[in-house]
Length: 302
Ligand SMILES: *[C@@H]1O[C@H](CO)[C@@H](O)[C@H](O)[C@H]1NC(C)=O
Ligand SMILES: *[C@@H]1O[C@H](CO)[C@@H](O)[C@H](O)[C@H]1NC(C)=O
Ligand SMILES: *[C@@H]1O[C@H](CO)[C@@H](O)[C@H](O)[C@H]1NC(C)=O
Image (cartoon, rainbow, N blue to C red):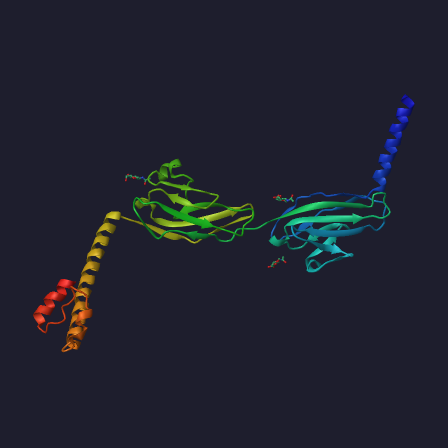
């Protein structure tokens, strides 16, 4: 029994060795390469075993909708010809990657003289992109005691950037309460969405604001924008004066228009009383030729 068991084991071992020797096998030094945009990327695919002298090598880019050939029929396809080549027989080297190059690439080898003739390996290429200057939105003036929201957004960077806010060149903490220096302010910063929210702005919050977007490969700023905080009382007074001025202007305009209209109709209507019946009650001030009476009535109408 022992002998036959040993025999079976030996047979299995030989079959295993034979399979290893006669099957093409691929390995990669890095199946998840990460590179910066505009740099060189190496997609490692190495034939570990084969007994075929000239195995067929293919590289495909596996898209969610379609799969395209990168290396096929022993040559680079399309625009890959200008920017990619094979290294150490099977690895794919892209000389200048762009963000569009990220994705899954498949290295396929067919070795007809091996027992198992085909093998493939997937490489997931990640392309990091530096942020560009973010777009910032800062309200120009806010009354004391009101809330205010400042926004910062950047859309190119990958991985998605995080955001920090600066006032007059000085970094703001994520929460004003966490720093004695900002005890008179009341704000919070959301580093993920890029918003800086004041629950109640104070005089001391006046300043030049800017924001920085940052990720693993770089950072970028938006230009300073001034946010001014004005006193609500002064605003109230100014507003009141403006309202009074507006009312006075409208009144003056109204009087003026009524005068002009009145004169116009008055001159035209001399001896033309046929229109009178169509006039609604209460505006029947045109029929008299006496100036004083007309004036009195028109101002009454206004
Ligand atoms: C890489 O490509 C970008 C645009 O596709 C180009 O602006 C840049 O000069 C290239 N860099 C190198 C080193 O070829
Ligand atoms: C490729 O890598 C990226 C980043 O590491 C990951 O988010 C993504 O899910 C991977 N894709 C596949 C198909 O594994
Ligand atoms: C906060 O306000 C108080 C009273 O107005 C003032 O004395 C103090 O200096 C302010 N603190 C800071 C850090 O500006």
